Length: 201
Image 1 (tube, helix red, strand yellow):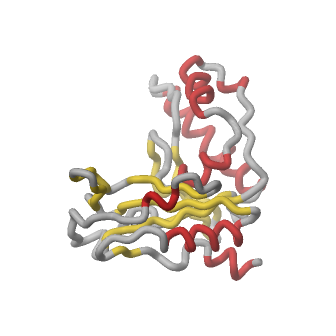
Image 2 (cartoon, one colour):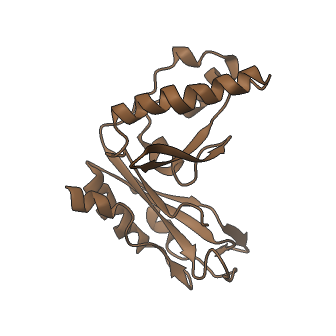
């Protein structure tokens, strides 16, 4: 098994019908069950789903943002994240209406060659400065650490490179373009993140 190697938002596959089904059969029953057990939940609940011919199936739950899922959802969110978190803490989430930009985002994870099994650490990362001042481009640190004046690799999944675009196809093109700005020894990435988008549109 491996952590996520890329993602996109919004998903054309997650329809209103699927959302309604998941709310009725998965999300609300999960919250209700925790409440019945005396574990009423307040916070971020990440539900990892797989869409199958038999309907949505739950792969995992996490009491945190999904990684790299948050790296495409949060850049599109218009709300102030701190205000949303405070509303969650104060029990007034029902007063918050999440709104998102009418665009798309794609994230491609840059990993160490050999991940998820055997990989080496400590390789200098170059090109991070190319993201400074670039509108709609983001780079998220994961398996990195500071070594003197340098940033070096320190894990399997090293960085998440995200780009926003007018639509998914545009965001995908820009995200892969931005992966070339960053370099480190044994850099590896999947080249098929969002490939179904290009095939569908």
